[in-house]
Length: 265
Image (cartoon, rainbow, N blue to C red):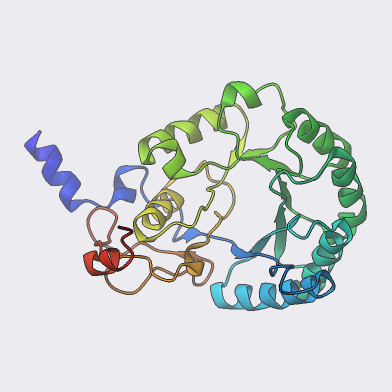
């Protein structure tokens, strides 16, 4: 037991959960439409297209993912997809996250009108798993879900991928179990981002660099945080990903002064 504790204190997490499967943990560049209350919906496509170019250049990502469905304007979403595609060209993959805001009719119309943009993945276009399954069968565009209840998703073979969150699953061990089970079910996986600070983002990086089940760059919102609450420079996506430093464990140290600054009484 003492030997195991010593090994854990001296080993990198990614070495203990699969070893290096790739040279860095890959991440997408990510974007949100500007707040429609501040910026009229007619300006959203151009603004997000500009951000897409900046984000891809900054991160070196080969995939740009962005949220739609926030402006309550379906045509705005369609125009945004085409504006982003035009701005990025054909070499960068694009994916959209709808957050289940569309009706079946709206999702059908959206997929019809955005076919020329060659979207690589649509995340949760509708709330119903059965409707997602039908849309995938009808349009051939890959669809993903945050549903990690495999019993619930098993009856829907057309849903391509499951996008789990390490924290919501309870940690790295349970995430590895989910990845293995999803692969056995024939589902692709990549990691979801939910405004991680330094510790949680480090966990994403260690899982992302070490697990062969992950078939696409993970989401990343870490760059939007004001402070990641760890000592040293924040981990940023560069050249398409993040390589954890060669330090034991997660390779980070909590910044207690920063933590105290944001403490809520």
